[in-house]
Amino acid sequence: MFVAGPDTTAQVGLPSPGSRYAALRFGAGTGPGVLGVPACELVDRRVPLDALWPPAEVRAIAEADDPVIALTAAASRRWQGADRAMLALAAAARAGLPVGSAAQWCGLSARQLQRRSNIAVGYGPKTLHRILRLQRAVALARAGQPFATVSADAGYADQAHLAREVRALSGVSLSALLR
Image (cartoon, rainbow, N blue to C red; front, top):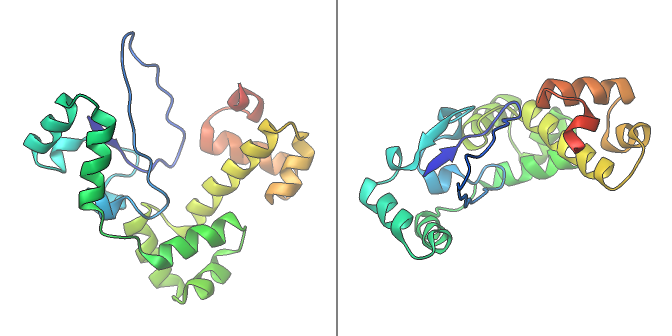
């Protein structure tokens, strides 16, 4: 069992034959309240869960009849709530607000927003904005919109900007990413 920290680029891996995966995905800024460590300590890393939680607890989860239920219950017990400012940051980023506006919306200075974002999300507000905008673009493209329309609707300057951002964040073209 491991924790996949926040990624700054796409991580592609092929499961080994016979592998089983179960996962919990935390919304932006909510993982540290369960995991007990700042997200910035986990950026682009895969860390064994027993390095963060007591090994006996992790073993009990792995050996449970239904590991997903056991993992969910353990996460619920550890839940400490989300940082409201970080939830507001994620909402502002999803809405495409510029970072300066997001800071005002959250009631923080740009410096405070950067610091709290690093702890809660693992990286700064601009990177979060880029990742959420890419997710929005991929959803639009999967819905069948032409790439030129996707770029405009998702907030890119033009289709070339969309193409550069997709390649920078995922390592592949938008067409390849959709496949």
